Length: 426
Image (cartoon, rainbow, N blue to C red):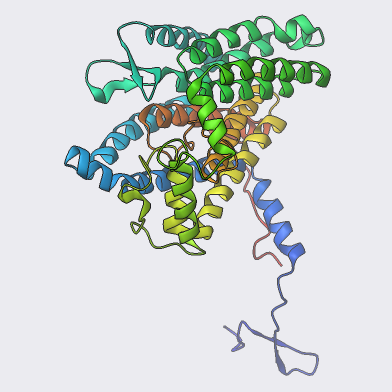
C-alpha cells in the first residue's frame, strides 16, 4: 500500500494501526446475494441451461457406465449404446440451439406443424413401418435401426405447444367452459388415444398429466378439473383390468415376494442396488446390478445404478437438479407476459417434473412399473431428442421474459446497464 498499511489494518483515532476483523457472513447476507443473482434479467435462462446441461452430462456418463456390460455381451462393443446416445445428443443440441433463438410467434406457427406431424407419425406406427418392442407397438423404423424413433415422445411437446397457442388465441374467451375445452381437449384425446392403442399406458399417463397441468395453468375451475380427473380414473381402470400384463404388474406390486423372476425382478433388484449404494456409493462404474441382475439397467431403471454408484448424495443431486429446473420453469410461467410462453413453460415443466418423480417412484418401488424414462438421463434417442427440443423451447420462453427482452434490446443499442451484485459489496 502507498501509506505502508496492510489491507487488513486501519488507522485508529490514536494514530495506531488496528487490525480489521472480517464480519461473519450471515444467513441474511446469503439471502441478499441470492436475490441479487436471481434479479439478473437472464437468471432464469442460466438456471435452465445449467441444470439441463448437468442432467444431460450425467445421463451420458451413466448410460456408458450402466450399459457397457450389456452392450459388450450382446453387441460386442461396450460403447454401442453410448455411440447411439451421442448421435442423438448432437442432433438434439443443434435443434435446441435453433429453437431457443426463435420468437414466440414463430414457435406458435411451428406448433401446428408439430401437432400434424405428431398425429401422422403416431398413425404410421399402425402400418408396416411400426415396430413392436416389449409388447408395445410404439416405434417407427425408418431404414436402419439407428433411425428407429418413438413418436409419442415428440407428441408430448407438440401437445404442449399446440395447446399453448390455442389458449393464447382464446385469451379473452377462457372464462367460457367451451373455449377452455374445445378444440384442445378433443385434439389431446386423439393423441392420447393413439398412444393408448399402441399399448403404452405409461406415456399416456404422462400426457394426461400434461393436459391437466396446461388446463390448470390457464385457470380452469377446480370443479371441472376434479370432474375430468374422475373420468380419467374411470377410463384407466378398465384399461388396467382388461390387460393381463398390467394386472400382473399391479398384483405383484402388492406382493413383493412373488414374480421375482418376472414383473417384480427389476424393482426388487433396483432396491438391492440402492441399498448397497449407501451414502457415497460403490464408485462410478462399480455397479454390481448391471452385470445381469438388473435387466437393461440403462433404460427406465438407470436411477437405481446412479444410487448404487453415486450413493444417496448422487441421488439427491439428481433430485436437486430437477428441482432447479422445475423452479426455473415455474419462474418463466409466472414472469412471462406472453400467454403462449406462460402456458408452454407450465406444460414443459409439468412434463419433466412429473415424469421424473414417477420414474424415481417406480425405481423406489413406490409405484407399479409404468415404463417411463428419466428425462435427459435414461438411454433413448427419441426421448433425449424430444427432451432437448423442449429445453430449447423453454429457453426461448425464458429469453422473452419482459426484463430479458429489455436487456437484449439495450445490448443491441449498446446501452445495456452494468449489472451489479451484492457479493463483496459490504
